[in-house]
Length: 141
Image (cartoon, rainbow, N blue to C red; front, side):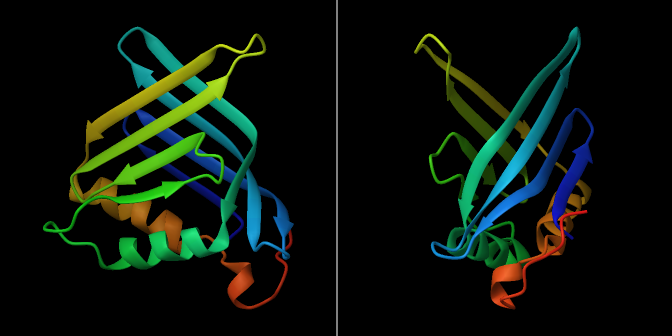
């Protein structure tokens, strides 16, 4: 699967593969995040987040075997505009962007999660097609 999506209560995340680079094994995604709150929602959209394949591999290997006793695992984009920190009990998302006028904008979201929530996220990451391991370029439907 070339898309990754999960929806846990007030948090919706979707990553859609948009480009691949075989020279520096990496890939670009379009990302949409919606965080609902009592009076509305925060929405983040980006069309140029790059991830190194080796970092993605480390993250997915760790997510497959993480336990209650383990520290949180971290996945970040190459430019560190997006950082996901995940444990069995918590999720933290940090987004940093520069405005058109050069002012930094940052959003931090941290919340507790249930084992079911963790399972949903874990499956979403493990189901994401790691095309670089097979040297096969996925179709982007």
